[in-house]
Image 1 (spheres, helix red, strand yellow):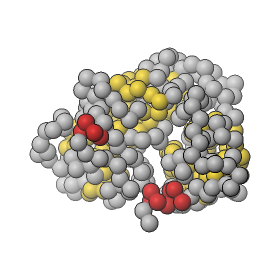
Image 2 (tube, helix red, strand yellow):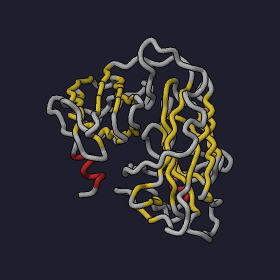
Image 3 (cartoon, one colour):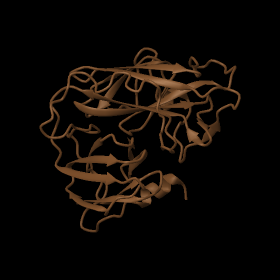
Image 4 (spheres, helix red, strand yellow):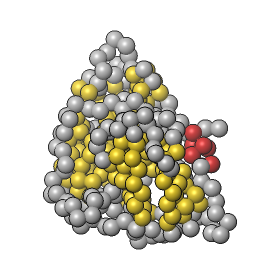
Amino acid sequence: MTPYDQCHTKQRELPTREAGLHVDGRTLDHAPTPAGEEVTEVMRRRRAAGTALVLGMALALFATGCGDDADVAANDGAQMADDMTADGGAMTDMDAGHDHEHDAMDLKAWPGDAPAPTMAIDVMAHEGGDVHITLLIDGFTILASGADQTSATEGHVHVSLDGAEAQMYFGTDIDLVGVTPGPHQVVVTLSAPDHTTLAIDDAPLMFAQSFTVPGEVAAADVVIAIDVDADGHVAEVVEASASIGDLVQLTVTSAVDEEIHVHAYDRTLELHAGEPAELQFVADIPGVIDIELEGNGVLVAELSVR
């Protein structure tokens, strides 16, 4: 059974509801600030911890398009669109002529004679949802689309916003539009030209940065608070209920670096020790949804959606 299959077996259907319902018109994929907290007009950290965070956990990122300096149309606010047609921007799989989806992350070892790459992710977020991201990379070269690889330290990047499906880029400047107000997280992964993920000691070369889009933040219908201790466990599994169409918010504090995975919805959230993290999504898939720590497989919450 692949990790993809395992993910989808985590959704257990409830007999009282009909599966496959989808609700439009709700804001997707943004994480609000806590109630009463003023949303700042600039990102929480501009080039904060400018040296990149190399995350040693497997994150199942799916890439759908290729691009250089792309404008990304958001779906209902913050989800990166599958199809992008901006000049030099990300192409769909149909345009690119290949399928970038993988059941599991394929790793390729970073060359042992090359220094480990570093990355600072510089984010400028503006009211209205326009976000400009600049990747400041040392030790890794992004190739132009179609260019031949001459070194094992060359390739492209996959970019994911708030754990949603990733896009592939062949440049260091990325423009997003329509990103919803509130805090967000962008994760950048280094990839070889054959779309495998570059890794050191089996740890994928991933770099994360949080930022905040100013504006009025929608209040969540259901809030799930999770506290991960220094051993990577929780005192008890949180049980929560939601109705179809509810806006669900995860509010997580962790004493260790980890990753939250919402099964069935396939949403992820990177956790850094001592830093609160939030994720929102619309409850539009019925069933009992397991929420786990991806690194150690510990169940932390169960969400019943009816």
